[in-house]
Length: 188
Image 1: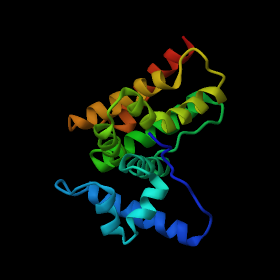
Image 2: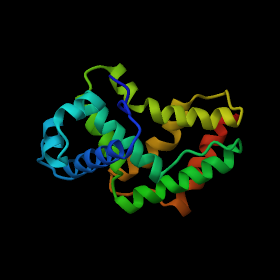
Image 3: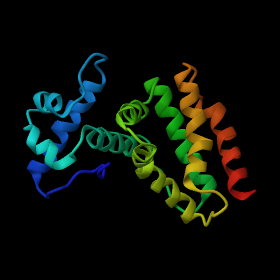
């Protein structure tokens, strides 16, 4: 699967194009019966399909680009070197965002991209950008006992699991439990 960010050219027109295309993807994702395809995105955004294909190559790459942008704004992964503080900041933001939205838009976009993937490697490519951010958190804190995938499984899996069941975790009540589990895995 191609890189998720597409090719970029500096300038205001590029930024406006990216915004229009991203807004079109977000709109289509909110409509249950909408076709999510590059031609559909082109029609909704007013950006020619050729431009979209040139920048993102596939609908999966485009959806992932939108998802990564949204999650970085909603829930950035800090990497200050203070693992407990970084985890506290991140987990509380994550749980608050999930509770606010019910189901996370990022999770829905990842599911959409994963459904279109045909191999396990393509699914791994989908989560690679977020894994790199978690690895940066671990690296900044000097943690080598676990890797980014394990950390994501400890924090992200329960957060989205409970959200999918309609009972999203509470930042005040549940963040400490996730952080404690993660710190135990990281430090032993």
